[in-house]
Image (cartoon, rainbow over all chains, first blue to last red; front, side, top):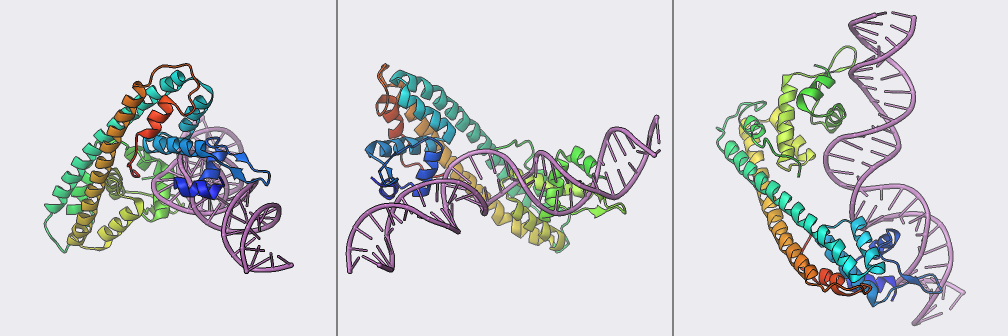
Length: 142
Length: 142
DNA sequence: TTAGACCTTAAACCCAGGTTGAAGGTCAAG
DNA sequence: CTTGACCTTCAACCTGGGTTTAAGGTCTAA
């Protein structure tokens, strides 16, 4: 199977497939003419990669997992995935907390700004400017 | 006030203050020796910038808001801020929905992987590998 | 045999929001 | 008068996950 067919069937652009090969995530055999030659196993591998990406794993992490799946035991893969998933779940919970906080800060900012009196004065450090700057404290990174 | 004092009082590195000046967000007068010369107004401006960043606005957006605050009316600033805040609130809600979905997918993946039998077999397309790749469908970008 | 559709590579570019480095000017203290 | 702490500019670099481009090889159909 040539690269464009994999691209079409997987929805992953050919340029990305070549990039994944560079990263050591997806190696194809080569035909005698030098073209990459993929099989169904590579499509499964791409399903794995897509799932891992959707779940928030980074490509180096995915590479490690795939190396383990290629060389290690089923139990080993399971043992590697478990803490990774637990960490992702914790990270998602952190982000949910931060976003919920952010939601409240945005609502507060909206209320502050809405409460500003209309005025044709220049607005250097007044009303909306101050109301806005005054909100959103105590919010860490995202 | 020289740049290092602003850096210390605002917590924003001097390199970032220079960067903000390049972006047209924070312009300081110059002393006769060429050094930047800041005042309290610049610290207020930095509070505004920090708040806007925490609320998820991007620097070009912040620049537009500050230009408006510098030249326009109070009412104009308020009118610019309102739809921006509404859009940020909608964006945060979208992200909350996606993260909540992701949380469920991660839990499902965790359950699938936990349910895999331990085995010393090689794990190419078996158990954890498949269980993991099978989850996490229908999740769009973040 | 030549057009055009496909494949190959290496290297440069993209995003945002900065950070870092080199080369040099300014200023106060000892 | 020199040392060291500041300040200046401009340009290059960083992250992550790719995309784009240039230059060239291969294959198939007319």
